[in-house]
Length: 64
Image (spheres, rainbow, N blue to C red):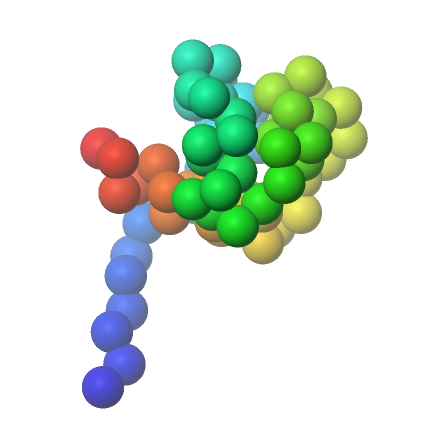
């Protein structure tokens, strides 16, 4: 059975705001991302990939 989960895809700015008060190593581990990729997002260095935004949007949707 296919189970679909729906959540709002966050923008890079929304993700950046939510990462300000988070432990990046914890979020990275839970999302399957690297600490450095989250650090770059938080510092506004570069543009995160769509798949990265999807993983982080899903993570934050589960936390709300």
